[in-house]
Length: 164
Image 1 (cartoon, one colour):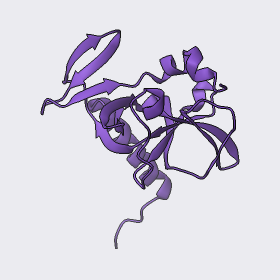
Image 2 (spheres, helix red, strand yellow):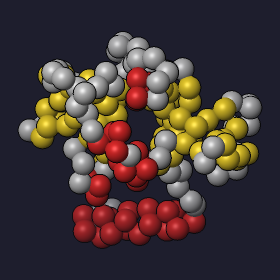
Image 3 (spheres, rainbow, N blue to C red):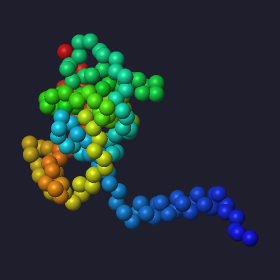
């Protein structure tokens, strides 16, 4: 007769194996996104969720980069078009657009509109350089990546003042 499996023991065994794997390997902690044709890296700890572009309610008398307010599961988020904010055009407005919800630990209901998500990227071994106080990366293929500093963005007076 086969041994009966205790669900609690199975769950604990699974948790132990996952924790052992996490300890043995460093996790990839950056997400690649595209903003106005440029590649950007975002720390996963700085974003709470990635969503398709929800329906936006426009807000009059705001700066051009402020796209409006979105209702996400009963919470209102202000949506900033990062391409326009970076003065590189506007978001492509196609089905690939995504919003990055800022992590709850920052206590900002802000969402950043990007053209597309490129997936997880491991930039730990990429070549780095500093230009004008910004960290820039070059991957194995020589592709240029910028670092999106969300905590720094949330401290900028221009980002916090949406009215014209």
